[in-house]
Image (cartoon, rainbow over all chains, first blue to last red; front, side, top):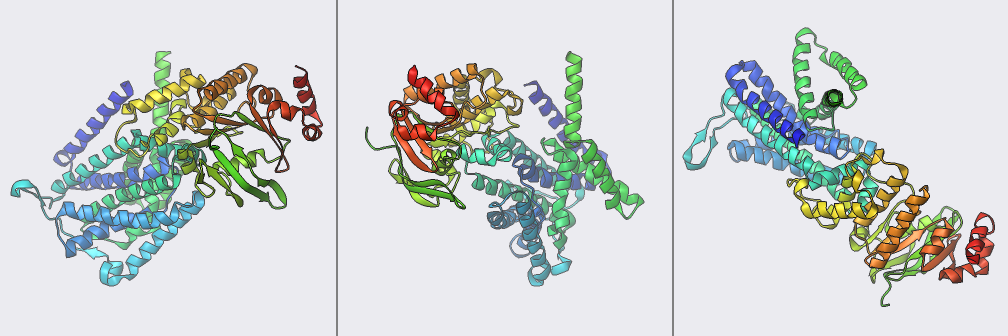
Length: 322
Length: 260
């Protein structure tokens, strides 16, 4: 109960701080915070698959792109309603994830990872080559941020970054809350059981393959949500969203922050974006320096930054009591 | 007696040239505590693996309560009421003892799909989990991760996870292997008690002849994938072929019990 209260207090504090950002920080900091939240949505959903179920996918960029292109195409051909657009993006991601997941969840471990990588790259080349629909290597450009119509004709504008920030924050908070609930739920425990011992899960009466597909599609939906929000933020959708280098981002972020907690991928995402910004000021080869940092964290901080820090806190607390 | 719980017809399995099950026609009656014995490589584990779906059936059929389950996946057999425990402990290592038992309870009660509701509000599941932990004597360890348990407690948990699926027919693969005498007596007493309650029919694979002869109402002796002898403990003890196969260490066990 005490840990629960502490977590609730921490979550409220972070939410308050995030609400304050647009009033206190400059334009660039607002933009960066939005990027951190987008990566946070992507990674926290992805970690339901990796951390909770123990499946390593290298294809989630495809669902991110499906979200972005889904929103872009819906906006161009049907309606510029942002909420409907996000729903269309998520629906597109779910559809692609169902197709790819159905093929991939029959396999595990390295076969699963490689199959998702291959499927993701197929989506990438489809987007690249279907120029009439997707704009090819130019992507979809000029995606609009129309105001959000509410009941009674009230319209909330999201045109400026300061306004759009709260649109992103809403989905970020919603996404993190949903993942938090899933982790505490019977479904979450069944997923953890599959991670710990898939064969025994079957003998416990759990249809393992169906659960794997369910969580694959669920994490794909989160990727699609992040992708559709990025399309609104950057007002474009690019084929490289589906590239495997982008699919690796949530993996790196989960490793960085730690896979076994809810906060891990969120903290990892913040570190990732901040580091990229800082290192890019000094050198073009930011990946080289990022690689070195990642190496240090993987070797020195088993369980990621969050995992290691919380273990340290627990040790200190135990010492204090003893 | 009515219809048998599970029957097999010409059930066979080969690993390359080695035959581990040859045209087995077996039936398991409701409520009859059965043991399967036989020398190493007799096909005891293969038989369990075939019946529970761990191994795909190469030829023959399996019927459970009259329904053909030969090609049914594991989880469907479990939901119908067939479960097993493992010879080598095979639980969920990083989860707590309570969570280990909770997974089959959730699956059985159809709650394992619930994604938003908190586990701590699933009161029926928590109650059932506690009852099962009390039954196997692990309630004090409920919040211990499985990896931190002693070997004997792990074996109890292994059986507890299998029992939590509330099977009608439960195969226990060497449930007492590596247990100390106190733990063993407790587990066997548990099995007897549960068998008397009558909800679960037990089929036990054992090496320990004391356990086998004191526990079982029926003994099946396997040898090279075939049934060598099938009957009451008295019949098996008196069987000449069984004595022949068990020349070696176990023969003294058989005779000793004969004298008691």
